[in-house]
Amino acid sequence: MNVHAALLLLGLLTVCSCHRPQPLLQEAAANWTLHGDADWTVNADAFTGRVTDTVGYVITEASYTDFELELEFRPDSTVNSGIFIRCRGAAPTATDCYELNIWDRHPQPEYRTGAIVTRSRPLAYVETIGRWNTYRIRVQSNRIRAWINGTPTADLMNDELAGGYIALQASGTGVVAFRRLQIRAL
Image (cartoon, rainbow, N blue to C red; front, side, top):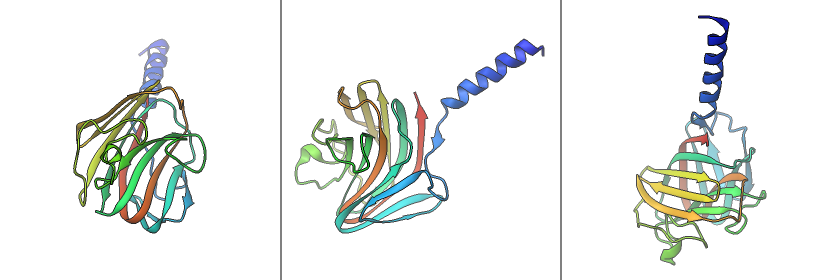
């Protein structure tokens, strides 16, 4: 192989590696910070949030713009949870972030699991309580799409937030776990 071919191959491998999924959860979880009052435990496999009449988050140190996030989650029947993306600040809210909800028994069905809270009703109702589920979230430019267990649940065009942090929520009372978090830049 000549030098030009070797450099071309090296360049292609470098470009391709940037678009491969990267794990978001390492053993020490050093790339996340805690906010709020939830009791979070972390190991190499999962974040588990336990709450009793409170709220708390684990938040990425890095900011993200266009990406595809895949993870598994397991909520109990009472917890209010969600995945917040493109968050502007350290205290996630449904107005300063896009909140992809995890709460099958939300008292307002338009905000139940699969909704983008205050912005988009779920396209389908999925049941997630007490078992591992997959969430795939694709954010590109002003479009946010999401799937739970392969079922499309959100498709939103919105220009409010261009980039920001990712946060996982445990709120109310109950337990939620997240594992196999991977992100791929688009």
